[in-house]
Length: 127
Image (cartoon, rainbow, N blue to C red; front, side):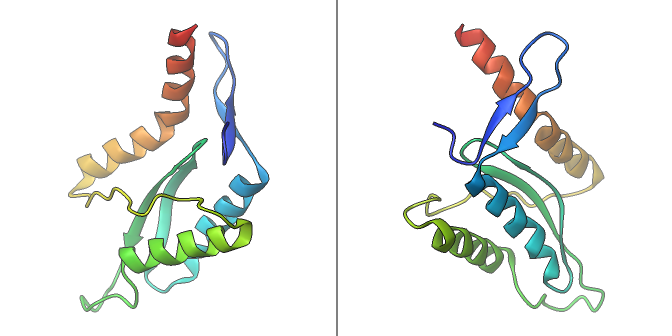
């Protein structure tokens, strides 16, 4: 049972897209709210049926420490969405990856773009 979204678009030429559940809609709104922090932007994201992928960039022209770091952003994001819907919405940890260079950034962006398609292809393989 998908908690955050359904991936639709089966068929040879259909482009997969996500249909967000009510929880998924609130999660997407929360992702967009992350951009309110100074020096922090969510460059790319995708809400999947039971998880989320994001590229979060931290820019600090003074080369000093940002007001808030990734662990605190993720903690607040998970806490906010969990409190809206109750229960255990997220696993305790998260997987992070520090993007090093433009090639790594481009590869991560492509992975996020193609992730819904991979989900559809895996589903087709099970049939």
